[in-house]
Image 1 (spheres, rainbow, N blue to C red):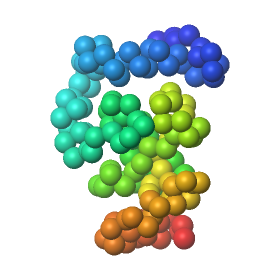
Image 2 (cartoon, rainbow, N blue to C red):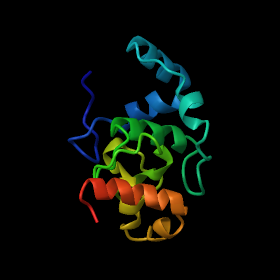
Image 3 (cartoon, rainbow, N blue to C red):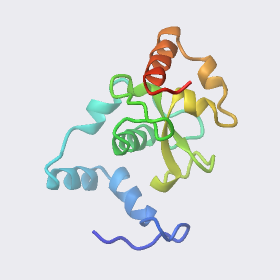
Length: 145
């Protein structure tokens, strides 16, 4: 489906359509049913997902789930696969604006790669020891230190 160019990024599709698809439950469900890929996304993905934190839109967990799925649950920086521990795959706002949920502004990063970003260093320090060991093991398999 052709989408009009976004005023902020001519290479991106219009963010209004994105918002309508994700924030209007009827459009989201109808769209997914018509594609033959309907699953109860909110039930499946949000079961163990915490509510949106301060400064984020209420629908942030739904948006994050879509971005993780788009990336096939892999870190877009180091490439490790986090299908088994999706909570260790964070969604990062490239421009730092928590309200800018345009898909071109969102990437997936493992907790280590996210921790390399300015103002995110605390993320690595807050990891549980078994999660840290899991990430280190995956990175070692890929030859990443």
